[in-house]
Image (cartoon, rainbow, N blue to C red; front, side, top):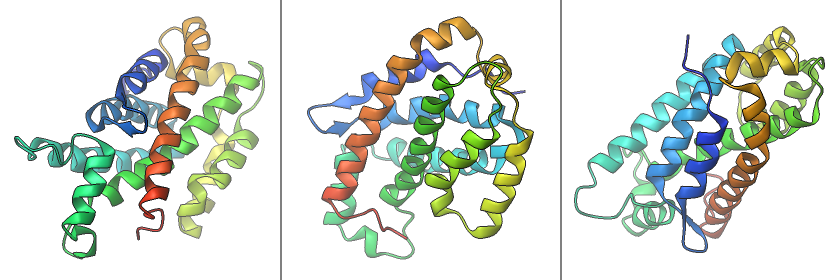
Amino acid sequence: MSERFDIEKVGQTFQDSLHGEDDIHLGEYLQAYEEINKFFQLMGSVFGFVSSDVRSKIDILEEFRSNDGTTTNFKTIKTMIEYEINTDLLKDKNYISGSRTLLRLHRGLEFVYEFLNRLSELEEHDKLHNCSKEVYNDTLGKHHPWMIRKGAVLAMYALPTQGELLKRVCVNVPRAKEVLPDMLKNTKTVYERTDSLYTHFDLHGLP
């Protein structure tokens, strides 16, 4: 069993990740995502495939950071993108791109934000399969092959009620509900900043 998901930690770490007016510290971003991955793991088989993919993406980006040495190429999302563009690394088919890797996490973050936002609007007894299916199809599902989409949507019928899920994933449900609005606000800010950077550098279509 995975450790419980700490909503408060995600919100605080994302707040700490904000850099300047439009940038994100990559280290703090990945720290927050480590916590988010616990959420995917605790969702069970529904998003097991997402969890393993997230794990590999975090590991790739952490390796880039650890190998960066005394340079600042992988200090923030912007410096990473600029470095890979300026050195033509995005055109190198043998290079595992940090910008491409982060784009996959960015798409996952949209799902997490939208799902938790919808979750906060439900009552304890409300079932989650319709909500999760709609959010998945509008976010992550757009980037997954048909077979994965079909399997994920079918698995969502096994999701419990809102109250049961919160008990499963959170250590302290009343505290989680209390801090969720701040966590959602900080997550949205990080998502929008990252999205704007990918728009500015025209990288949303990275294959």
